[in-house]
Image (cartoon, rainbow, N blue to C red; front, side, top):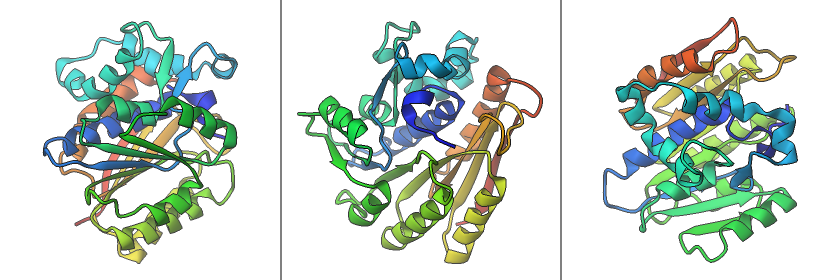
Length: 282
């Protein structure tokens, strides 16, 4: 699967990823102390919904588009507010022209003391990313492989923060790369929060990754799934998941409220499901 951000921004995968990212940032901001976000596969940061790539797929209409059209219950609206505030701030309210990638979601929500490190390997995407954040002293964009970045920039000097990992899954061994990088990073910085995103197309690879985390001694591992239909290796993506290490204690209960509602709003056919499972305890 090729999951380059430019074709899929705002889709069902981004909904899950960015809801979780925004909730993590909100939790970190409960304390005044600064924190750092490392986004290992940053993309270009902001996506024109009228671009050729986005017009080719139109996936955002089945993701963020459906959310904005829905009648959101007050309790859910409160949990979605940080993410939707970031989206609306870059648009004319709910009239979408652009959709923020993870770097821009994070940047919209950061306080003056918080910092953001972005790494991107694709040359053209990095050029766009670097130009987008040029002159922003809170953001550092680096032309580097995300897996190498985790070895180079952790732990951050702030000693608190999170690592967002969402590769393009353009190579067959991406889960192995992700597993190795996370295990090595955890050994250097066991107190950091790690948020891994992936498509729900190779369940065996996901289970193998979770087993490897357990065998490596990782603690406090949470799994989230959101499926709007039944997908498999030969179908388009109808579901995505996230594995979180050292997630805030509030996140699981928040997702038990949000994910069933998202399932109903985003469903595309039989096989809709959601999951919140604590795989490994503290």
